[in-house]
Length: 326
Image: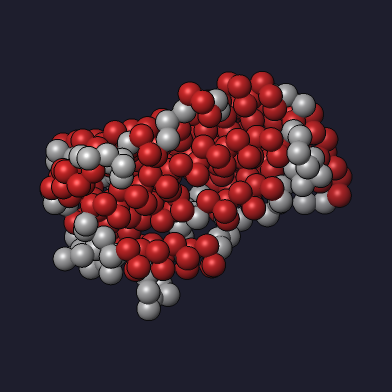
């Protein structure tokens, strides 16, 4: 990104940051009206505390191995929130705003996201099926190792990523909740449904930010979209690992999600197509020649990836995760 592009991005972000109160009111809930983890799990001060834990543990026995593995992987991903916050704070046009504008949005978004790791972590602890020290080590590894999602400090690329990732996370949590309900895990199903609902709102917010940038700087926004599609959207837990392992844990987690149909290669393509439709890429005007070429690439990509995905088979070999108590 050259100096002129950087300057334009800063101006665009400053302009959008002036409306941050409007976005926050639309896409974030007030703390007083929002759900909290302690409302969804047994109250340790209640006389029925142990009885309610036994209910959760009894229900959790019906979770399949793959479903529990995916739930744990999703929880570890949520627990790496400090990494995501520090990345958003470093975006061009954000770092200088201090307590106002985009910093206000990032704090509000973070406060809502923070509940996700809290409630899922506590559920796993109460379930009796998880080796918590091994799980906690994986969380620490992921925070320690960080991630590289190819966005740098470019807000245009970053908002393409968050639009995609929040949508994908909504899909994953929602489907885990559905499978949990089918297996009789009603507490877990409710938790996942609430988390998924948050992710859906956040996805809508970030898609709105991109939509506004397209109005203000269409050619550069189109090229940023193309860049992210060429690089592919990697999951924030791409460096996920277990104690004693440095590779393959994320691949094994993804295999389990693919087998269950929680998040598949087809879902990846459908999320991409939804973004193309939501941002009206086909009808976008006022583009430079370079941006027109970027649009052509984007428009052709879903069909190309679909042909590849249709030739792929679901993995059949189950990995034995150290997180799960046999």
